[in-house]
Length: 381
Image (cartoon, rainbow, N blue to C red; front, side, top):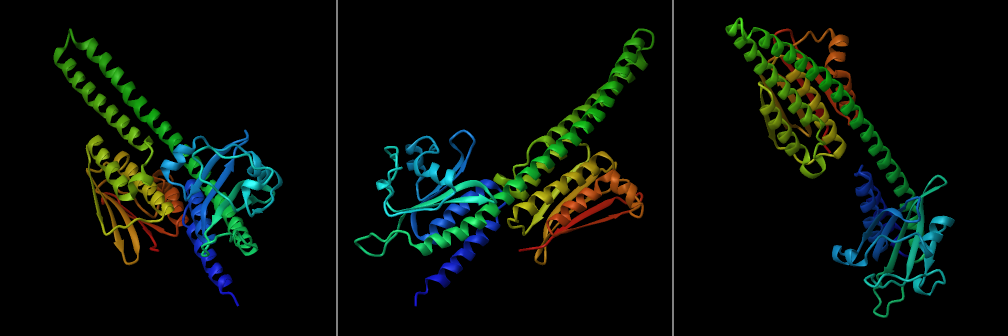
């Protein structure tokens, strides 16, 4: 009896777990392709997401070097066997793709391929991609193994779960885009309100100074000093808003470096001293890192704009198997029992939703005149 089915099942399980770890569409596509190639022991694998214009919106390959891929040239069009797979939503298993009447050739730098296995990736009735492999590795020196019916079954299972992973990743990215749009809208309103008030006061004070400059130079000098103060405050508001509107570089820099950069800029932009400390932090799941960053930004916004704090301390540390973010200020504080009013004013409901959305929890400690500490804890993996 062959042991392939059990080992194949284990490989499928490994591949599915790998796919479930990612939320970004591009990462999911890369993981699907790499998993399919490894699962079926193929030399090449690719996955194309079609656009509405006869081409591919995204096309990911595995087994081809960057230099080879660059030499191949533009993305393929939907033609030949690829077009048939997308049009008919039908699996294609060929002993030699080059001998198929639908084969239309490859660019000069394209690697040579023979045996071929391709199938559509479907979300319900919609074909959302085409997954295909070529050149099954063969232990026999003479070659000629080709893809089997069992390979086709394994790839079919993988493709079904790939559709789920890809759909979830798309939903996540759309949700994140909506969240970013909401954040930017909120910041735009705050920027307009805060800076408009400062500029209005600035204009009135400048007008008063102009009226006094001849008859009461001493008072005019005082008004001009106030102009300088208001102008500095308006500049601080603008700098802080720019910092918050700038996209966070989580993907490239990770949570710790992104937070550190964000806090350094806030420290320069505000009169309050803002510090950051991190200890023992490893990379966290992308969803957790984004939630922690957004909660930190919201809590910092509250501390710097509303609390009157002179110092704000941010810490990100390990606690047991989990990770804890804390933002502590020495500002005015509030009465936590007045949670409805305070929660609406300080965005606590939004922060709690972000924490619970990644399996974490948010706690708030505050008292009038005693400052505030906001703490978010997320579980470890």
